[in-house]
Structure formats: C-alpha cells, structure tokens
Length: 574
Image 1 (cartoon, rainbow, N blue to C red):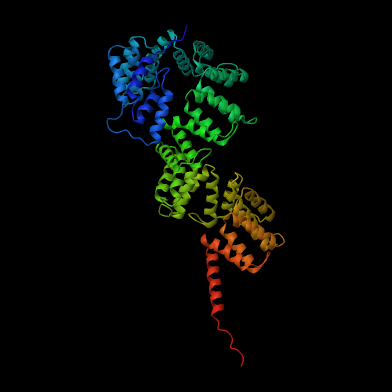
Image 2: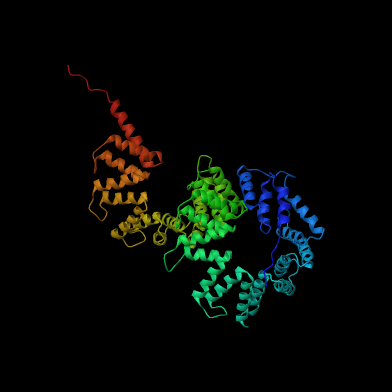
C-alpha cells in the first residue's frame, strides 16, 4: 500500500501571506516551529528571523501576526476543511503562536479524524498514551494507530510495533514485533529500520548480528531517520576501538543538518569550530547554530554565544556573545550559566554578585566547574560573604564528580586548613587525582609535595617528574619551583645560573614570585651579571601584581638610596 501524501500548500500560503511583512521575530519563529508539510518559505523565514533578532527587534503589544494566521486557519476548519482542522489541533496541542490548549486541540483532531485525516489519528493517539489534558486511554490509542495503519500510514505501523514490544516484556514472541517493524519499514517509515538495526545489535528478540544491525542503521539513516543519522555520526566521532573518523561523522551530521535537525546542526558546528575531520570554518558553524538558537535550543544558544566571544573564524562580537549565553542560561543550560558567570566576574564592569548567582544556578543543576567556581567565591568572599565551610561544601561536590579543578582546589583546602583541618596526606591524594587527569596546577603542587615530603614520602626525582609535566603545559608556577630547586640545591647540585633561566621563563609568563626571585638574582649578581636596573624592573613587575615581598624590597631599597644621598660630603682638608 502506498504511503499517503499530505498537501499543506494552502495552509502554508495562508500563513505566509499573513506574516511575510511582520516586524515581529516571534512570527517567523512560530512558522519554523509549525513547519507545514513541504513548507515553501523556511529559508526566507529563517533569514527574516536572523535579521530581526540581530537588530534586537521586540514584539510590541498587538504586533504579532501569527494569531491572525491561526484565526484564518480556524475559519477554514470551521468550514469543514480536514487539513485545517488537523493544523488547529497541532497549533493548540503545541502552543504555536498562541497558548497551548490540549483539550481544544483534541477536539479539532477528533473532527479531522471523522474525515479520515491520518496525521490526526497519530497525534491524538500519542496524547491518549501520555494522558495529557485527558485520561490516558491505551485501547483507543491502539485503535487509532490501527485505523491509520490500515490506510497505509507507516508511522502508525511503527507505533503499533513499539506498543507491542512494550507489552511483551520478554514473555511473548518478539519475532512478531520484528515482523511488524519490518512492515513499517516497507511502508516507508525510516525509524522502523533504526529499531530493527538496534534489535539486531543487541540481540533483542532476534539472533544477535552486529554487521546486519549496522547495515540496517545505515539504511535507516540514508532513508532520513534522524536518530539513525545521529547514531551513525556519534559512532564515527567517538569510536572506542579504533581511531575516530571525524570526516565520516561530519558527513552524517551534514545530512541531518540539511533536514533541519538542531542536534545535527550543533554537532556539525562543533566539528567546524574545532576543525576536526573538516576544515575549520567559524562562519559556517555560526550559520548552522543560528536556526536552533533562534528556536530556543539552549545548547545551540550557548555554542553560538561562545563562538561570538572566542571569534573562531568569525568576527568577535561581545554583545552577541553575551546575548546568546544569557538566553541559554535562562533556558537552564548549566555551562552557559557558568560561562556567563565568568564573563560577569571579569573586566572593568565586573559584577561579582551576579557572577556568584550564575555559578550557584549552574552548580545546583550539577555543573562541576560551577561548583568549583562557587566554592572559590565563598573561599575568597568575591560576590558573597566569605564562608570557608560553604566553600568546602561546593568544592567537595565538584571533586566528587572527578572535576580536575575541583580536586586541585580541595587539595589546597586540606593543605592550608581552610574549612577543614590541615591534612597534607589528604591534600596530596587530591593533587594526585587531579594531576593524573592532566591538571597542570595540581601537577605543580604534587611536585612540590614530593620535593618537601608533605603528605607523601620525600622523593625529589618524582617531584621533578610532576613539575616537568606541568611545565610542558606552560604552567609558570612549576617553572618557578624548579628555579627554587636549582637555586637552593634541593636534591641536586645548586646552580644559580640555570635557576635564573627557569625564573626568567616563569617571569615572562607573569608569575610574580618568579619575577621577584629573578630580581633578587640580578640584585645580588648570583648566576648572572649584577644589574640593579634589571633588578628594579622585575621587582616592580612583581610589586604591581601585589607581591608583598617585592613591595617591601622596593620600599627598603628606596629608603637606603635616600640615606646614601642624605649623607653630607666629607670636609675638605685644610
């Protein structure tokens, strides 16, 4: 039996005639969400939405046109047009352009069903299964699917197979479900092929056959099943047993992106921003992210915001970056809250209290990075009242998720006794867990612990190994520590000249302690030529960063110089 075709051309024309000159971005967003079958104006609607949103256009009271479009559809529905009745059900069911009213949506679906509109059968059955706005009625839902399936609606066939599989619970013949899925596939439902593939992969109701299962998933993806496309793309991108194939992943995501799937668009954009498997192309990534972001997807909004902030092959735009991060944060995206908090905490117009609130929002959603950042706020009193015990609570939560920064911070709390009793052994364990995850500051701290024997058995060689790992990541403090080791001869022969090179490396990276120690070597002429001017230059850099020892040295040096110049000249002999 041939799958039924649906003609929404009249509905599509009607909507577009009403909204095409609108200055309200919501009208075009609603059109994209409504998406009549074979909609003719999707690209134009997206272009208008981008234009209006970039201009920060707002919808004034009475300016929205979509309610007028819905009213025109309702007039057709009241005149008995079954397609219009289906669209009224869809609009009210999903709240497109007007508040959701599932009860009224059901009434319209039932009117359309009386005229044999098959999509209404499928949508009403889904509502009856969930019990939204009406008591759940599995029997009627099953009957609706059967009636639609009898007339060739492949999606109804798939849902019948899905329901049968759920009913069996391992007690009946799963082969029957497999046959029903195959019938749905033959009728044109691509999702059924995806289910067949995964059943073969898992050996669920049929003999396990990985090769045939993957073949079915590829067939389903090529037939347009988004779930199969995503599965194929993820398997290529995140292969465990062999090298990832980013080019293949990009090809799958590109296929789904062309179909308008937001997740495929985001995953392809991510590859384009990273330049993995395909050439880096920030402009194309932004173009892919905008449709999902404009339709309210928090992940797309966050990625778009970060792309504008980072300026990855696109012009940096801090205003757009903040706008999209804020929208994603409003949508509950934890990482967006965290990233927006970081923005709020920096710069001349920093708002530390707002940053702390955003960190807390993300932390309560479960972001380990935000939990660590919030812990630092309570530790330092930035944006909140300082509270060592609350700092420990949040940092400990981050560490429980294995967050490298959280583990490093927890180690520092144990090391210094902030919020908990001093426990160098516990600190070293935290540093070790963080260091093995590649966190450079923890590697530097662990190296120091081995050098000093704090919390671990003293082992200078092991300490140097961890310091070198941190240095390879460009960690300045580790270079400073190696400078101390060489200057003072800790487990090695003292070598002030070599120490000065390590201090210089860290000083040029901005480490205040290294700047101070390098200045002292210049002042004393240890390991390099004595140079008071260079000593002062580096000491001033350290002092400008708040280094108290450097500030004291400068004050003392200036005072000594003043005393020298204040001594009166010796009298000339008679």
